[in-house]
Structure formats: structure tokens, C-alpha cells
Image (tube, rainbow, N blue to C red; front, top):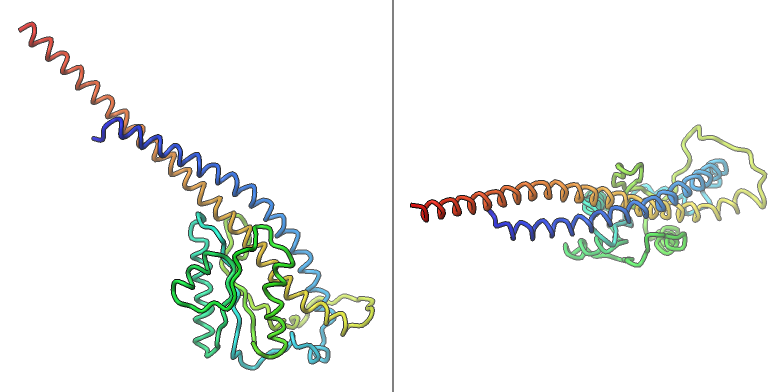
Length: 287
């Protein structure tokens, strides 16, 4: 049985660890709520963009806009993989990397050349480790991403798509559904898909005209899709970190209970042994 002093040292170490994980859980909870608010705020704007584009779209207009070009075969595609700069979030980053690898493998299996663009230290570190060429990387985007960050990520790719240099752009990110659910998802943001048949139509007073408005809205729609992926990634990361830190705190509490019982048994055994030695010594002196 371990000595009492060693057990006390282990108990102290686990208590310190529990304080750290509990603090990290509280910080992650606070940041997650702010990120969740940004996700909620971004969704109505994205839906409004979709509604306007759906109402303005027509096959005749579509022929005038490169971003609506639907290639017969995807010869070259760009994949933007979003990961976090930090860990301590369970399998969060590993699942995103797995999803990125899956979409890359699928595209390359179809004969498509893939250009990989990485956001986040975890994804960049992994793909460099496995020897995968990374065309661009960003590790400076904070946990409060902006529309400018999204534009910096996708503007060059949008221009390359318009020139016909690439045929598709995909974004890999965690689709934030709730605190407990944010499955890794690969979404195609280019080309912009035409609205589904029977989509809701609205009547608008157009100024200057549908062609000019659609020309402005299509790049904005693509940038907004990437912005939404960034804010959902942040919210999902802090949700995953909160869950991981809560589990770590609970595990530390369970370990403290086990160590406490072990320490008490060891202490009782020591006391019993000392009493037996005293009784034995007294009996020897009397004998």
C-alpha cells in the first residue's frame, strides 16, 4: 500500500489539476455563449441573402455571372479546412482533420487536383507532418472572426474561380447545431448553386437593376458563407472545450474520492500497526 505522504502528494496534485480544469471550463462557457450569439446573429442575414438571390435568379441572368458557372467536371478544387489554434477540446480538431482528409480523398479519387488551404495551428501542424502541400495557411484569426477575415480567405479563390482556374471551393468546418452537437461538415461554396425549383419568391422594387444587384450579391454571398463557417467553428470549439474540461473536472473529483479512501485506509493501517507495537512492547516489559 502506498505511503501516506505519497498519497497526500498525489491528492494535492489532483486538486490543483481540478482547479485548473474547472477554471478552463468556466472560461470556455463564457466564450462559448458570446460565440453562440454571433452564430445566431449571422443566420438571419445569410437567409436574407439567400432569399434575395433566389428571387433575382433566372437562367438568362445566370449565364452572365461566372460565380454561377456549373462545370461539367471538377478538374481542380480548393479545400479550406478550418481547425482551432488550441487543443484541450477532446477529438474536436481530429474530427475536422478526418473530414478534410475524407473530402480530399474523394475529390482525388474522382481525378480532381486539390489545393489545400488551412486555418488553425492544429490542422497546419498535422498536414505538414504528413507531408501534404498547403497552398495558404492562417493562424492569426482570433476567436472573434470578422467579415474581413472571411474576405481574406476567399476573395482570391473567388477570382480564381471566375477566371476558370479552379472549378469548386469547399469549406470544412463544424456545423454548430447545439452545445452537444457540431458535426464536421464539408460544404461547397463555389459555384453558387441556383435556387431549388419552387423556392419562395418575393417581389422587390429593384434599383438599379437585377443584373447589377446580383453581381454585387454573389461575391457577398460567398464571403458570408465563409464567415458563418468561421463563427460556427469558434462556437463549436468552445463547446467542445467546455465539455472536455467538465469531463476532466468530474474525473478529477472521482479520482480524489478514490485517493481519499486509499489514504484513509493507509492511515488506519499505520495507526493499527502503531497500536499493536505499543501493546506488544508493554506486554514485553510486563513479562
